[in-house]
Length: 163
Image (cartoon, rainbow, N blue to C red):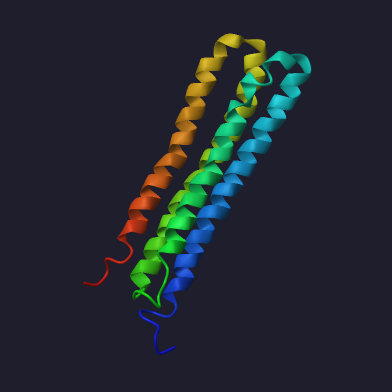
């Protein structure tokens, strides 16, 4: 490995960050989709005309996986130790980037699933609750967006460790 630049173990942490972003964000997306999907299905038995209107939490949960995919692609394209030196600082920056985005996506997915489940059931009984449910879902989705933004910032710090 004469043409390897940087620390030999550093890419492990970078790739761990990329996989963490995708795995945790997709876990949040899956939980949010499943939990709110159960609410949509049970509500649809009594009020089938509201099913399409109540699909919003499922869509919002699905977006969380895209956030993880974006960070995973950003991180993985920044790991090329044969072209440019890749140090432990860079690996840790990518790891923290992936964890920030992935865990924020996981927590947002849990919030979206719980709110979506209860929200669509409540909306079936009282239609005035729809706007409130959407606002709560937007704030839950914003948590994942914060993780994406921090992940992009942390990922951009990789490569700045040495002159």
